[in-house]
Image (cartoon, rainbow, N blue to C red; front, side):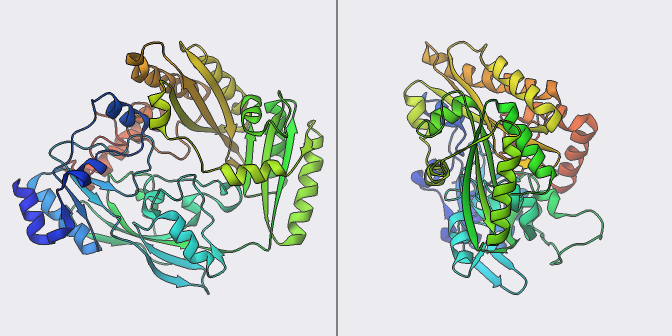
Length: 466
């Protein structure tokens, strides 16, 4: 047993785990490449220990002890990240927030709910729904991710076009800094008291501090929920419809436009081959929903949009969180992933064309398709899917990296943003300078060096190596 593990056990007792099963379960997150390396027998080594913190003080103690020993600390929530935010080495200690679980306070009058950061997303939503409220944040990983992880990765949910992303929902947070000190933001609906410190930790992927508590601004559950499906002759016609109805002020929470290959793959029973399906979910007061349904149908008609059965929406709602595991697909020799990027409206068609064309040059590629799932007044995101089956399984990792490289480089050429909501991790970090610019990346490095001068908090994630 190392000195640092002995010191942790002396301070935290049974909250420090060193059994093989726990160490094995915390070596990495859900990144495709990590899973592939495991299947190839080249997986990452286990950490020294896993600390399952039960309180903010446990987190502070862990960080203080590890900092004194010069030991890297890797924060671990639900482990649902898909960009390689978590990767252990033999000298590292994993700090699990799963013991920080549960509702701290529900304030119906001010529409606020405070949770410990390790609370799983679906359980948090269930607790507020029992009181007629909703967080309004529905990532596909809602049953696999923690509320603290939502903040650390700057997440977006499937209902974001109406309810906003995590930065629009987060009201306040508590975070333990790398030296063990605790920062708690002030509870106020808005402030002009200098830069908003919440944004320093949103998207920092556990490199600047460990989030221990979050407060969300809630909404009342909607009076009415209504699905709507429209389909278009071209992807561009569907995108133009979204741009136009958002411009006019219509904001259904779910706005998802699938290109023709994805539309047929998912909705062939209701959408003809070659058509591009737009799935909408409207929520709110019944009168508003009725008017919004009619208004969007009229706008869609101007771009050749036709209405399809609302059964398409029912199918999407039922199946939206059911996807095959990466391990299952990789075992069949299939290299698969999704890549979400973003851009302004006048860039989106070029972005789509550039990425799909570039991906189709990858040898043994089977699928290159996309859908738009989060839209804004000034732009949208594209969520690309690629599937390849290399003839030689030894080429799977190289094929995977090649698909990512082509997507990132095409996005940069068009002027889009390289990450919409899955974060940077390790797969995107070498492209971060082109996203932030050298001055932006240098600023981020300086913040890291001040808060974590020894570089011990989640090393290797987010920031590219110098």
